[in-house]
Length: 153
Image (cartoon, rainbow, N blue to C red):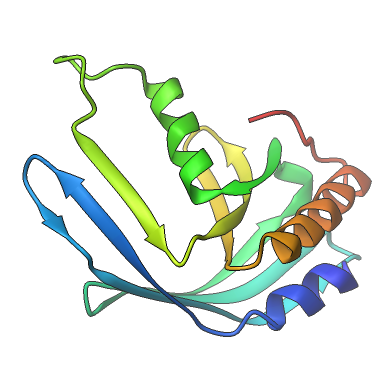
């Protein structure tokens, strides 16, 4: 838990661009996000943090979050590109047989995805794949020790 707290607090502000291409829009909107005040509490198996995110020049998240590790069903570490491909497979083809949409993250982003249920998941973002891997391993171990699950995504 201490490793998770240390790594997440060290992230700082992430600035990135998402290149969007679809039938309705094309563009390169800037994004920023930051985790602060991360506290990993082994006694309650909870990670508390403040999450701030700006999209298209507007703050869309500015909230305190608590993640209860015993409720976790899946922990997965991957690039955001891999994540989008997996979501495409889960959702299946669009009615016209073509997704018609593409996103690319610049710089490339990596994530530790923590899924509580089909409707509730948290993604921790990283620009460094090795750092994402370290946090993913530590998160998996913490979830297992807290009685949660770490099934496949």
